[in-house]
Length: 423
Image 1 (tube, rainbow, N blue to C red):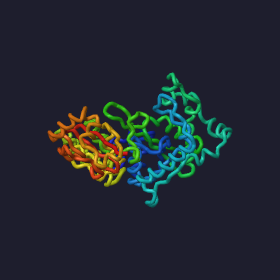
Image 2: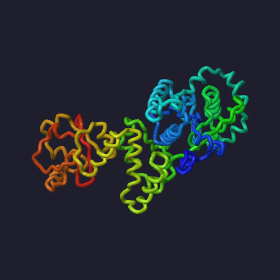
Image 3: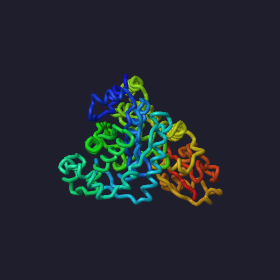
């Protein structure tokens, strides 16, 4: 299967500006293309990863990626798909985010592979030197307000209570001129991005034709959503960040593992480099053995490996095993906090580890109403420390009972947990 047909079969192509021309160019290789990321946070997230993986596919097929970090557009905020205006970031935060995202993109695309090595660009480099009057004379005069008003990203906001500011209204002009600059300076002829970017992209192809007299193209991909149609993204409140300090490998693994059967096939096609035959086999297992969740497990392992490496997968699988009874030990406070984020926690004095009473400690947790109830549960062998049953009514606590630097886990019965931190 050629590259174009593979993209189509995976459902990666939502819209193409010139389908017949692009089909030929995709299969021949050698297209310089770009994809942009605004630094609105210090980490990209799982929704962004779809476009990043697509950039990787293009590069593997012989095309040259330009990874644009929007130092200028990030100061404005894209209104596409947003019901109200973004909060503007201060310059220090913006610069920190730019540096973090540049480093993050370097994990995925190859910046040292010969003729089609990826190139990192920042649109602040050309926007910062452009004055307002020059902008109006050279760029602004080429836009017609009636056409700008017809863009979906603008129409939806104009009719809303929030409205749209001149700042956000101008975003499509900035993004369009990015395309002009990259086309002029680097012969970039294609922009790729999410389907909510179609209006901004076509503005770029039109401006490139007007200013450079060059043909430019654009391709959009579907927006990644869960089974309820909720978009993967930080603005939707369900962000899974690529930065392990913001979303642990375990949390990313669990998020993907819990995706519905109805969408896992599409996610495998979007996010992994498994062949279509391999994905088809997983789809058959989803139908014949849905309880095994093999497709979800494969998706979770492949994506976590791509983002966090083999060690990330091992950490995620180990953390998952804790909920199946494996002894909890040799983990960090940070890892423990992430794994047991959704369970109750209490804090006791560190001195309690110098011989504090076991039953008294249990009574301090929300798992037991009293020391008497704790005693009865221990006598019935229903209490575990770090998943190891402990029925010793006379036990005294020590630092040896910790699972991490400062914490241990109490389990009552099969599913009731509590984190105890000693500070």
